[in-house]
Length: 136
Image 1 (tube, helix red, strand yellow):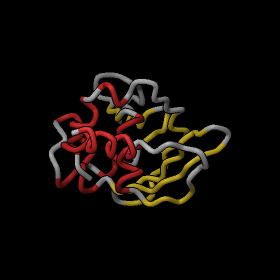
Image 2 (cartoon, helix red, strand yellow):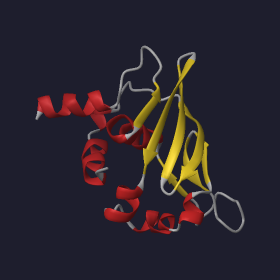
Image 3 (cartoon, helix red, strand yellow):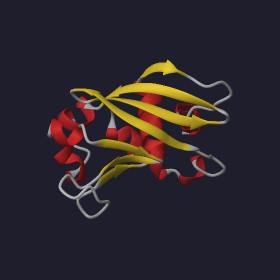
Image 4 (tube, one colour):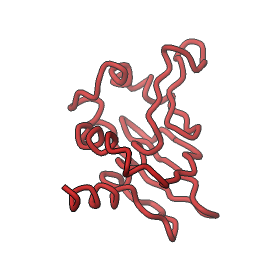
């Protein structure tokens, strides 16, 4: 996965105008740094498996994600619209909670994830990055 690629795409606000994401319904720890992710679609769902190893261990996406290198912390993931890791001691959403925006997770799933089930009639976020490349 490539955090810098996502960061560049996320900066272009024009790509996000009139783009609606329904939400992340569920996130399930599979093993190591792999998650299974259920996205809400229009009357359907899409399911991906995504290995976060390269993002969390190989790359440097910032200090905020460093605690997730601990697999026991990584395994405590929740899908609650965004991808969330609550405070490991309190289970609260506070200053020690970690979250990753829905659009970011969707982008990584589409580009690097294993597609287990894809809903029909869904415009992929990765098509937005292709649009950006054409415009550049």
